[in-house]
Image (cartoon, rainbow, N blue to C red):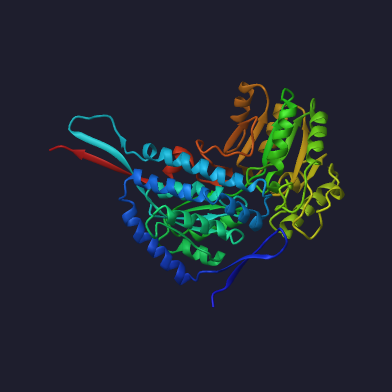
Amino acid sequence: MSPLSKTISPVDGSIYVERELASDAEAADLLSRARSAQENWRQVPIALRAQRCSRMVDALMARTDVAAQEITWQMGRPIAWSPRELGGFEERARFMIELAEDALRAIELAPKTGFRRFIQREPLGVVLTISPWNYPYLAAVNSVVPAILAGNSVILRHSAQTPLCAERIGEAFDQAGLPSGVFQFLHCGHAETERLIASPGVDYVAFTGSVPAGRRIQHAAADRFINLGLELGGKDPAYVRADADLEYSVGELVDGAFFNSGQSCCGVERIYVHADVYAAFVEAFASQVREYRLGNPTDPETNLGPMVNAKAADFVRAQNAEAISAGARGLVDPKGFAADAPGTPYLAPQILVDVDHSMRAMREESFGPVVGIQRVADDEEALHWMNDSPFGLTASVWTRDTDVALALGAKVDTGTWFMNRCDYLDPGLAWTGVKDSGRGCSLSRVGFEVLTRPKSFHLKNP
């Protein structure tokens, strides 16, 4: 009998989903089907590929209510917010669908007497997408839809915490009339996934997850000449200048730090505030955070749900306690949140002040409902601390001065630089990171380049 994967719901600790895990032989058979299907799919005109993907989006959106409920039970996001993820899936998918024909068009070189020269964009073959639980639809769509539009076949290996999301996408593609084998999902363990990557047949891996897991993926592919897209998280900083609109900045940054219980790779985890506005900013920020309602995420009134499991919550508790023992102050009393209980996924939000970079809370990814706020004297000090990190996914500045924002952005080591915005992914821009935040790119016109290879045609008339 095949081993079982059990999804434990953070809502109440119950087993929400059970699935049999595929063996190596079953995974190999699925890969063989993907390769066969891709040989035909690559010949299908891009307009028809786009039509199938558009119908898939229609089918998935028609089940938004069901999918949102499943998100809440599988990973704990408040039901008030879960439907937004399906909206984000639609936004990204439809953007890439509209862009595909133009982005994948052959590049014709300038006319040259007696010659025709162009560069064709050819699909890679089979794309393996390994998707996380924290944004189970949004992270998957970044590679799944563009890969299929580009003429690849896709195998989606979703987190064991959110297996139903892969199944819902599969059902939607079936309803859209996608040929069998072009999209498939796979429930399997970490070791089986790594062996699949190491075996011939997978031509590209798109992975979203932790730095240690990313290293294992890279190691598994080390003997093969394939590319990897690795989005590995962050410790994203924000800098509030003295000229910032404080009321606006506070509201946006509270949401950027605590939405999804802080379980976002591009969530704000550290804030640097100019000394002139530090006291006012911290007071307003703490006032808003204390208004969160932590509780059962199936209750529409809840706006802060549990973390994915007790282990993750206890990791953040330990980070907080360590920082406080080293001199930091916590501005939120957990006793004000009845649902907070050590040893459970339910964790009160926290703000740490009097912090410095000797503390793990300011350097190590927390991935939970906590943010450190540090006072700085000027732009140069803010730049120093923003760059003092092994991560570089997104960063933001809060200011009324666009010229200053552009000048600072040129000096920050990051994949995306925001002015007066945070924790958002625009599908028209390249989604990428530097340092331990990974490598590669998804979405935008540039995202199609990593899912295809160039083939040059040099034709001479006799």
